[in-house]
Image 1 (cartoon, helix red, strand yellow):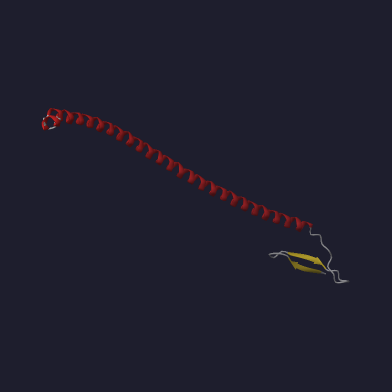
Image 2 (cartoon, rainbow, N blue to C red):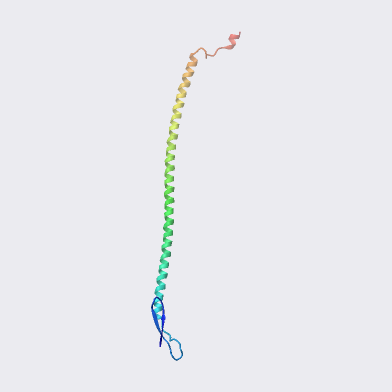
Length: 132
């Protein structure tokens, strides 16, 4: 006599029943264990692959963030360099203007001094001689 045992999704396995004592006869499951081992190995490989892909995605995301940060910093440095160049040019222009104005002030000072010396209003008088 045989008893049918349903394994998975419609596959059945015939188990011989020892009619004398009502026990089942041992059947080697070596073929099934190899099949199950293959399935388990496949699932482990897929899980490992999924974890590796997740790790690689995390590394790529981290690298992307670092790259964006580096790009932002480089752009900021370049902007600051341009600002420094502009300020340096402005300082040079102000120095030049300052020298020009100093020169003009000297000329005007000399002109005023000459006018004052030529005018009788600004000439010094001897106050001691007038008092006597």
